[in-house]
Image (cartoon, rainbow, N blue to C red; front, side, top):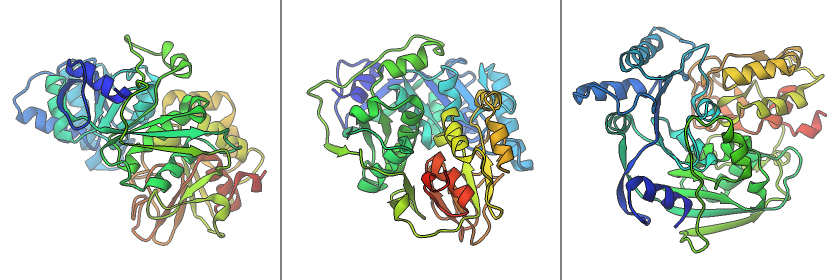
Length: 418
């Protein structure tokens, strides 16, 4: 079996499962945010249920419109707050404790290797970087899981992606996943388990692994997953709040297809509007003037991402016509970046630093684009109107390219501003 099949078999109480099997699996953790959880709470109440299945296995994290951007968002977050209090949920994280959910939960040791995790947010697949089967679901599915501690799946077929070669400077997990989506398309792994393997993956730090699995959904995948190893163990050992288990695919596991790439010549990549599959090397782009840069989100708002942006911005200034927004993904990342002097670098470069929020990524607040404006963002989606006006444009990149673009006032390779 593949790693995904092994995890699902264990949680379904079966000796084995195969792709297309319909199973009911126990879950280890469930989560919702300020957009999706109110609907789940409404469905929970309509069901007549009185208690969640386990108050330590459900997290509510208002991170999309937080801090409250208007009355409607304040009411939504109040719904979460009151439900968390009523159910005595251990894991309710609001402003001051809050972080972007898919950075916060691994950091807190709440999602772990071998888990089955569901969340009412499509980027729940991020936790596959830990060797968990993690996927997004609808709000009514979240309600059912909060009540029963179970959910049904059709077991996905697995696709293996083998990455070989040593990465060039400024190339990270974001570039590997953009390259992948550019090769197979936004529906190239629809309802599949994308399994990332190879020497390049083994050399990746956890930050880049999270980024790759985070954007599996942008290829249509059910889950992105990386078998846990010594890098994973080092990350989870001090954080884990409960026992965990490492799984690996068998040598004779069955894959629907296999891709094998040497990425040693890969450059930093940029996804052009209006699709994550519209990918080109940054050096192949013409001069594209920009108005805004966003470094943050559940894709690239971790400490290492901020360090990379700071390395490019140090001693430089953001171009006068550009707004540069730096958004640490959690309170801990915010505090650590401040201790390391990264904020001083950002502020001297005339960038703005925000409290943790998803705000600009989904066009929610704190970074909305006007008609005709262009942004370079370390976020995950660049669909029409994703960050504001339908006549705006979003270009996806890694943090180093984003920072270089902020300095140049156009999309730029980091080497151009060093």
